Image 1 (cartoon, rainbow, N blue to C red):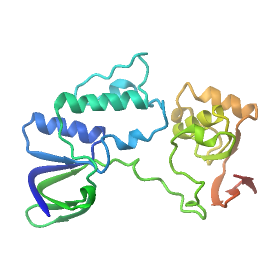
Image 2 (cartoon, one colour):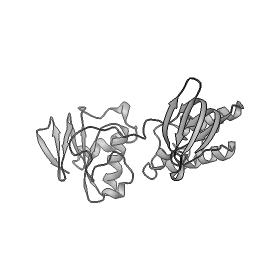
Image 3 (cartoon, rainbow, N blue to C red):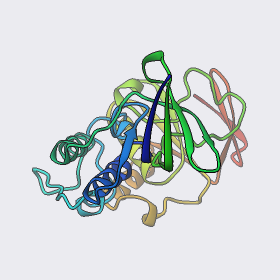
Length: 247
């Protein structure tokens, strides 16, 4: 088994991991960097042309301005290109497709085992920084049927739902954007949300009037003050509404 030594081992190469890599390199601190997939992997499976909720200056890293052609908030594609540019500009060395499979600690250091391409590698590091974020793991509901093949915890492409009945669970920004994009792609969309209405503080200001208008027109069905409690191959059950909705 290969064994490499370093002062700092950085795990994860999303925006935070990359910015930390730049800071360590500029401070001349010895470090190594591993990533289970490709850089910015979580962002890479966002639906095509998804725009960030935050403005460009808030998601820019390492002092590098983020510019877009239309001076609007960056899309998934623009931000991935930006992050690739940061890696190139600072010549960051990231060992991609090298997932961490074990972390142990003794009195003096961390022992980290990775598994790139089916083989194992070990790192000995005085410090380890986990920059793995939170969106890489789904927020599960822990209800019957949650793992059925037609259920997804992530939104990837609205085309998938063309002419399909689709229930979206949630009423904040991501859920609203998913509902609108799938509706415009030809899906028959319903929304279940535990709140009594959509909150303007939690939805992009340019999306809220459109979703509210479609709900009022009956083009998107909204089931407020409901909670999803069960999924079957053909139906869903919403608590608080007193009925099952076909999926």
